[in-house]
Structures are given as C-alpha cells and as structure tokens.
Image 1 (cartoon, rainbow, N blue to C red):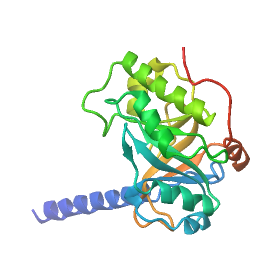
Image 2: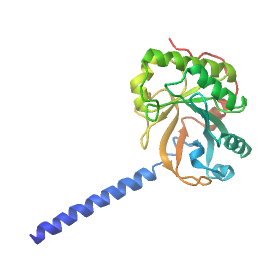
Image 3: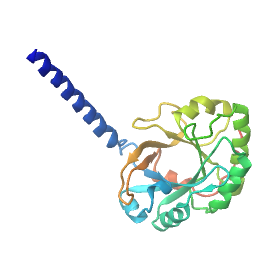
Image 4: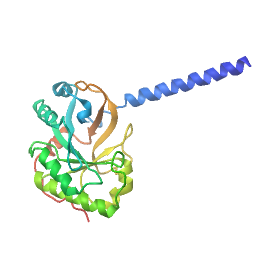
Length: 244
C-alpha cells in the first residue's frame, strides 16, 4: 500500500514538472533570430499606454496597431500609438478587424476616416477571424463580395495592396475559395505556420509575450525577410486586390 501511495505521488510530481516545463517553453518561445531577425509587435487599446522608445530599444523594428473595427468602432489608443510609434522611429502600420455583419463599404469608410495616408507606413491590414466575430458566419460568396469592396476601396485610397491577417480556422474555412492574391500575415502560436507556407510575410507567433515599454502581455511577430525588404513595403503600390 505504501509503495502505491509513493508511486502515485511520484506520478503527480512528474506531471507537474512536465506542465511547468511546457508552460516555460510556451511563455518563452522565440523563433530563431538567425532565420527571423526582424521582430515586431501588434497592439490595441488593451495594451494601454505604451513607451514606444523603450519598445524600439528592446529590438522591435515594426508595429501594427488596431485602428478600427466594423463600421463605426475606432480604437481609442490608435492616434496616440500612431503618433508615438512614428516619433520613436518604428515602421508602423494599422489594422482593421473585419466583421461579417457590416457592409464592406461601411468598414472601408471607417478605416479611411481613421488612418492617415502616410507614404512611409506599412500597408493596411485587414484582420480576418472567426473567433470574436458576428454570430453567423457568412456564405463564401457574400464574404468575397463584401471583403472585395473593402480591399478595393482601401487599396485605391492608400495605393498599397492590403495585407490579410488570418487564423488557420479562417484560412481553412474561407481563404482558398475567396480568390484574393494579397500578402499574408498568419497566426500560428508557438510553431511556424503549417498552412499557406509559401505565401506569408508576417507570422504572429505569440499572444502573451513580454517586451520593454508594454505593461502586460503583447502579440509578438516576425517578418519573413530582411529589414531592407520590410522597408520597401512602405509607400504606394500598383496592382489589384481582386481575385478570380
């Protein structure tokens, strides 16, 4: 009986150790800097006040910040984040959370009204996720139509092809059927993206990272190529977002 009790406690301790090691790995996961030296963050009002100069000193090269959501929500920290990240010398871009229950034209108007047409900025980003969206997922044809309107109007205004940020769930449910040929930013926590392997430019690898200048957890990202190619993403572009 005593042996069984001791063995039981040993199993418990081993499981606790395994969980602790897994937690440590996940919380401290970083892609190898030899392959992905260009690092960035993405933020919203949830991060509160940010010391952007401290962020840059920590090795961050770029930042995307939430600007808008749906047809009328404007992130209350966007203007300050945009101004201060630029003053700190970071490459910056703005993203819009695309909702399934508002017309694409309304959402494009909201974004354009909120984000300056700064030729030195990174391309606009549209955040495409199933989680946290409207209760009913749209038919593929309806989503293609409304998202297409959003992309066309935003690209025309900024003269830059928008980047599509997406989770694997959205990718598997919709992406292949939409036909858009835009640069991709993929969410794949703690492991390199296993979907759209050849197409992505940005990879969000952590959603509870830590960086100097940010009080609390923050999303961490890498750019696939070097700093020079990242810099070349800024500025107006030609081309069309419409797929076949």
